[in-house]
Length: 79
Image 1 (cartoon, one colour):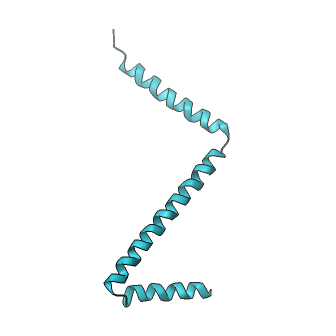
Image 2 (cartoon, helix red, strand yellow):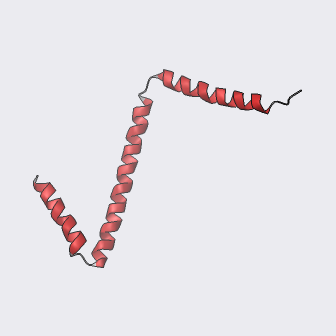
């Protein structure tokens, strides 16, 4: 709870009293933090997808093959 109060105080300082030079620096730090968070979450989601049962991957491959097969059938010339 203590760190939450400190974080709220820092955010309030940022919005109401910080000069522009500090705001630009904090914007860059925030951008880097958001990028790092998205990178970590994407790696975690890839690991979670890889832990899925193999039947899901077989079903996805069959759906892709069915799409290409139907596309070829539609493009066939009519006699």
